[in-house]
Image (cartoon, rainbow, N blue to C red; front, side, top):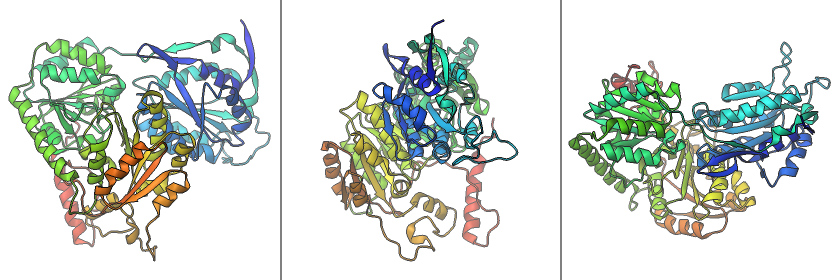
Length: 619
């Protein structure tokens, strides 16, 4: 057996360079590169190993480890989980900063490889800089915290172990049912240790995403249930896009006349103009989708994990509605006593279509659903219109939507914007909406947009990545504006400033409480509130920046940003109290006080509890 003597770090990078994936008949590296911040725990050895392969695995210098992970998630989403980026961080706080990003990738089932420094295997220099000591368990450290937020976790304790660990990590990241982040801890001394690795280990490997065919009996049972349905509806989730089943979903719905509603992750499974697209479902959904879901007798849930915002905490479906779960993940397919069809969405839809033959939903049911959608469209049109009323998120969304290129990618996360975009954005291009609500993570917006733009530049340079972010998320994490300028990965960032955490202030008010500690003006520890000069701040990071006074001025600013060659930031103030989308909301279970000295709090508690009567009890 021919061998080659390499350090552990050198072997890892050489192996990554030679892993390819088949995408639509073409072969590309499955790892698109990485994001890195060097420290003593990764620069001497892993840094040395990455330099010779910097052309094959471009390394983007991060500003914050957490935002590096968000950027990797945005990249993986754009590539529909078929490609990933690695993140490398130093031992101690550098690695610890990746925890939130790993949780986001885990919740969203996204591939991301973390190559992180770890404490010395020999323990001779212990305790070392940035090491957490656990006196009763010297093997325990910060990196063990990633076990809860990783689909694959390993700590390399011998150079030979990467022969098993790297392929296992990649298999996890490419598994449709088990996809998620992989963490590999690399002790600082071991990274530089050598081993005689088999040359065969570094030969080119071509990977393919496995498509699991559903069980024939499960298909038969699902077909029988759909065939007798009088009011069927399809819930289309993000898994439809990941399986490449967008066209198959449309064909299935059209062939059988079944209305389609979208989850947050499934936004842009259908164009807004498609006659069977009845709208987004759930807490941040549409009256049209929620009405149809509430009347349906059979619900075909495709590629969704049925999160509470989708199901209205399990109140949007009729108590006696039958659920069919078509999902590559067994746990998701079987939720709430669904008739589980475990398998790939594309193959599953084709099999269901073959079984149903020419069967169609009753015409009056489909027509009624479409009437609901027309009513919702009229509401949205009025909601996004601007004129003699306070500026709002919805108005800004409407202005940008009207001017956007069909392939522009829209990115947002957390706060009030996910709800407003989910409800008000009219899909112009399939697969162009990234609303991060799997982990609902503030700070994803700009970083995730940067990662998406890196991917988009490779495939669709004519389109833009458009980031909607509130002032709260901007202040939490904004440094990748600088990253985007440095790397010439242009973003258009709309900063909609409502003076604090306005959506949580709204929730606070909706539960009967006075405004407290959410809007800057309502913070008792802030004697002199003032507004941040976001325009000056963005300019300081090298971006074009301007502030507009109203939605009427926003359109021209957006066109200037589209014409610009580098990142542009547009700032507009919106009202924290007025202009919220008031329709389309399903009930959402939240914890409210059973006892309070404030009558208003008790009144709101009773209102919340009254909605519980419609909640399915897992049946």
